[in-house]
Image 1 (cartoon, one colour):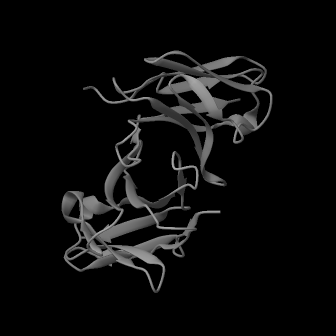
Image 2 (image 1 turned 45 degrees about the vertical axis):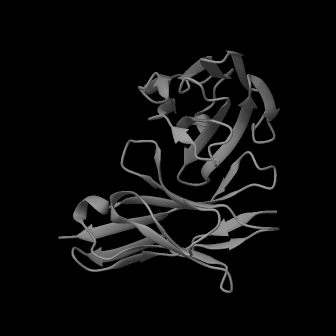
Length: 113
Length: 114
């Protein structure tokens, strides 16, 4: 079965520093990978996706993610964190049904001023 | 487009009462998903529809939960009777086929069962 793992419950980073939120995946076949963000009292918002092509995917709000097939990872990155980036981040993979997504457990990002 | 619209935003009810949550998907989207989010269990997919037909309801916790999609612009998730352990945030999401599996989420309904 398709699955993703987010090994960190929380990531703390100072404003202006680079941030990384980790995600590893386990799939049969080629992976469709996603990152979503959830701000307090809001629904999840799509950030970016990887299907094929360049291993570095650029998304909304200055975020990018690096697909690494040998390490089965899809880490979310941003060169310079903002306090407003503080939120809950979910990694997801397309299910083998090709219709639904399987979400990770989420990683809380806290950016301190 | 206004996005996925859920109502109510907050619902407080007493154990044993019937609860109905509502969702209006984005116009033109042919998939609709219902999720539940709790601290303990994270984000769980309950059921999803394609062209108003339920495709996978394996995530529905028990018979007290039911979901319907009478037309392309409306879906309901009903809990009868409700129990305190049903307290959670319930999200609806919609997706267009051919859109590379990008789901759009509503703001959610926060349910508290006392």
